[in-house]
Image (cartoon, rainbow, N blue to C red):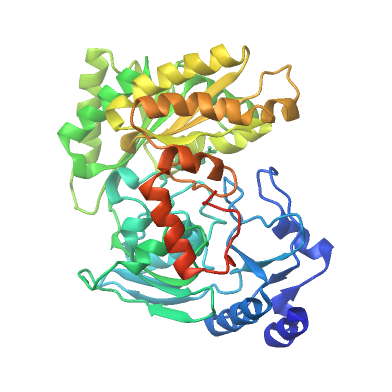
Amino acid sequence: MPIDTLKSLLGPLGLITEAADTAAYAEDWRKLYRGHPRAVLRPANTDELAAAVKICAAAGAKIVPQGGNTSMCGGATPSEDGSEFILSLSRMNRIRAIDPIDQTLTVDAGVTLKAAQNAAEEAGCLLPLSIGSEGTAQIGGVLSTNAGGNNTVRYGNARDLVLGLEVVLPDGEIWHGLRQLRKDNTGYCLRQLFVGAEGTLGIITAAVMKLVPQPTELAVALCAVPSPEAALALFTRFHRNDPAAIQAFEYMSGAGMEFVLRNIPGTTLPLADRAPHYALIELATPRPNAGLRAAMELVLEAALAAGDVTDAAIAESQAQRAAIWRLREEHTEAQKREGASVKNDVSVPVSKVPAFIREATLACEALMPGIRVVPFGHMGDGNIHFNLEQPVDMDGAAFLGRDHDIMDTVCAVVRKYDGSFSAEHGIGQLKPYMMPDWRGGAELAVMQRIKAAIDPAGMMNPGKVLP
Ligand code: 2HG
Ligand code: ZN
């Protein structure tokens, strides 16, 4: 029995079998999926993890890798049949090295994104990846989903920030790829294969991340804007003025902001009136005396004069910056408290975001009268969370039962604008059914061949990503 062998390998801290103790690992945070793991494996280091994978491989047992369990798509939740092991990275949480000259950070996969950011900050650097769940999400999961977040507009996605990886392959062999080179053209780029693979090809156990210098000046503003078009016009103004200064450009709908103000204690709007739409801009630079505040004022004055902005609040302190960001970051929680919601993590070219929001809104309202459309997200990179909240008088389960209708309605508009049905949250078990339609033909066939070559027994995170 693999359980006995695993028990002697991993010890009492490394193996959880009681249902009461595995429950927290067995369900996703959105409570959309609940599985029944055979057990939860919690190895203490890469060697233990590799040995555990070897034992599972020999027994034909399937593995679901799990980091902070913050997947939006059920990417880390096991099946219900009790046959799969969850492999939790949570004990592998060492900062291995930090190099302020090379500007690199080497961490175990189980380090939370927040802890990695803090380690970078202590060395005067910035790990330029910021997502709502960063306090809980772990580096391994962040890389496995190729997370994006608020700073993609400037620094790219997780994929753009990884220089090296250590990976345990499905047969238990360790690939030691923790290189920290800026140039390394040596055949196929293996690390990029594991980034975004959602644990279906192997388990990321450590990574070398790129850092940048810590900003010394920041300017954050919240703007009331009359339309999504005006929000885009505002982005274009900032972009023309100084693209390198933009660290985040976020869009929020008036309805979504109402959800936050209504459901999240302590939030207030730092503007005179409620608005139909909002934009949040963050400028940042490591350059001393860069005059970001003056640049912010200049662009906003021009936008106010042109009517693209109707009111704006520029943060005067760190507390005010945090309060403005809170209005944005609490969107997920506020939507959860309003009832059942269907998420559409989609992207379109930046220039098409306003038309997409407009048309997708009309399409959803036509599909289901009373549906509440609450789009928000990373306008500066074209990634909108086009989320739909249940009508107030509808049963939550009945609403969720329509999830494919709603997703298909939104995605028809995404397709019209040559966008993607999966921008930054991944595919998980929520969206594999969409893969043939969106990535069919040669693209899906190559993905299936890669999967078959690296994981011929189909051991790693079954049922995720590929249909
Ligand atoms: C964000 O941008 C996250 O805050 C979550 O990607 C989005 O809740 C969501 O749909
Ligand atoms: Zn997001």
